[in-house]
Amino acid sequence: MSATQEYRKPLPNVDYDIKPFWDAVRKHQFKLFRCKECGAWYWPVACCRNHANRPFYGNMEWADASGRGKVFAFNIHRVAFDPAFEDDIPYVYALIELEEGPIIGSNVIGIGADEVKVGMPVEVVYEDITEAYTLPKFKPIN
Amino acid sequence: MGEDFKNKFAIVGMGILTGRRPDVSIRSLQVEAVRLAMEDAGLQRQDIDGAVELPMYAGSSDRPRPTDAFPRVMGLPVKFFYSVGRGGAMASMGVITATKFLELGIAKNVALVHAATDWADAQKAKERTKGHRGMGGRIEKAGYWGKPFGDLRAVSHHSFFAARHMHEYGTTSRDFGAIAVSQRKWAQMNPQAQMYGRPMTIEDHQNSPILVEPYHLFDLCQVSDGAVAFILTTAERAKDRPKPPVYVKGVGFGEAMEKLWWEKKNYTHLAVESAKAQAFSQAGIELKDIDLAQLYDCFTGEVLFQLEDYGWCPKGEGGAFAEAGHIAPGGDVPVNTSGGLLSAYHYGDLTGLSEAMLQLRGEAGERQVKDARLCLVSGHGGEILSPGMCSIHSTLILGR
Image: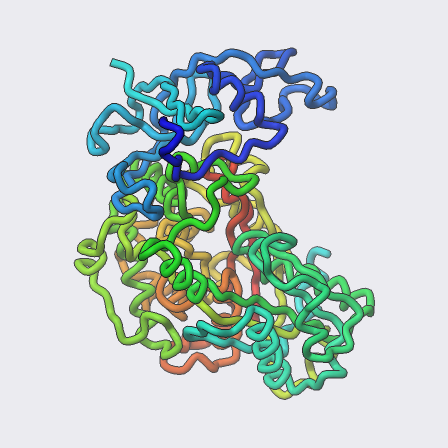
């Protein structure tokens, strides 16, 4: 993106809890929240439910994840509610059920909107949108 | 509180303001709706000694804060005032709040009010963005996730609930359409409804523009200006009021985060189970005792889910149930008899509460449900950071 061309779409709201996720995505790495004790995966941030009364956040870490999953549900935006998205119409906003278990919301790209199917295997791709931000999106695995 | 909660408290007055109000503040709407509710209850200023504001997002936004609250503007001698509400579940939380103050004897009559300038705000946003109804900010709201990916409006994340239900149960767009058509029929008997005088067929629904597939325009609710206020008091005091009291029979709450979210079922189910169990147990009733229901209907899908989750029909059969006419005028389970959020006006679950009041008092005119004695009002909403988790569900049972 050239310095003169302003990025017009909304930017992520990065709070302290989710900053490690966005920092990793910036480096084109896909991390999820994992329990140090039993390896259970979470996204967004959650304290592992498998152990009673452990030091909640203390038991968790951000760990490298596969970045692969399947389309769980999706919709197709056929109108732009914001002019910045006009060129993307129609676009797919989907729930991706990751191999590790958690569900994340993102776009499915690299395929026609009408060809997306529930259950379709997808993997993460990275879109560097500004100097500071990268978005994790998903494309079908061939 | 259990069984002994039933019939201890009653709503004795209700005020509703509808229509487009492009140049009125939230505060002024609250003032006028509360005045109407007081008039309806036959109460004066000095009688209202407690007040609760019911915004969709209590404690946030630029809505009036307690330093400039409607009770001060009205000169009500209140002993407490604050805000409760979580998404569209506001009336239920207001009832819980007010009844405790009444039980403790801190207040004798509590005024509760929700007001909206959403239609007026949308027109201003349209001007600002040259026709787009979108987006004020350039940064995602705290606590939300999807805006950078184009999850811009409520329909962006509610439509994949519908999509998932279609995938799991074979539900079709026509099934959702049957709900929209049914509620539009009710709205034709409500002169205050925004869609009054604008009947709709299933073909109209199917031909309406697809905004976010699978949702057509007519799967979406109205955007409204206006307000609903009500006055809650003890059953004992309610006897002295001019109109017949409408009793609180039971109130219950559930959250998707309790169980459904972890089971990945929050995309096809609402957190009805807990809310229903609590409210029905307090009221000492079963589903068949409900004469009519005002089900939270921000989109058609939420109604379909609730028809199944409350048990009016088996899971996955909500579409067929609606198509068979059960919830339409003349059906055995009248649902959203004002036209609801879909076809009348959007004041969260106060839309349902206002309609319950009219129906239970026999004031619903042409759309009056015969022998309406027990009405269910549900609420729904909450944050959506966790994908698709509009967490809260509330069940309020009102009756004669």
